[in-house]
Length: 86
Image 1 (cartoon, one colour):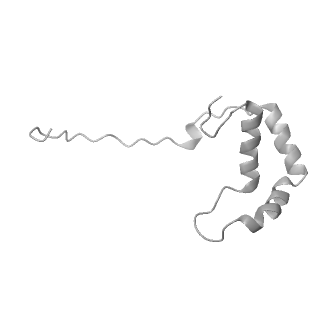
Image 2 (spheres, rainbow, N blue to C red; image 1 turned 90 degrees about the horizontal axis):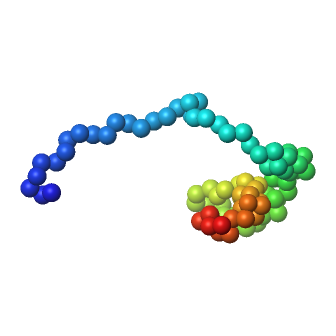
Image 3 (tube, rainbow, N blue to C red; image 1 turned 180 degrees about the horizontal axis):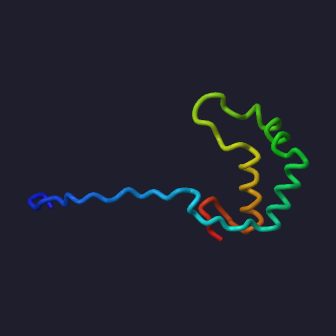
């Protein structure tokens, strides 16, 4: 490719408005679970529990309530690892 001319065409911008993306309905089980966790104050409880272990500098981490919800989904859906292998 060193002796040939380079292709001067440029790829067009790829942008999609978030309002144009279809939204799938959530699963009833996870909606109920999220509601129960919200009523029980799960996020506040977990944040207070893990606060001593969070670093004060650097990039902010995933909120503990969100992290535990991700673990719940992985467990309930039978996802064995973070790479999503079933």
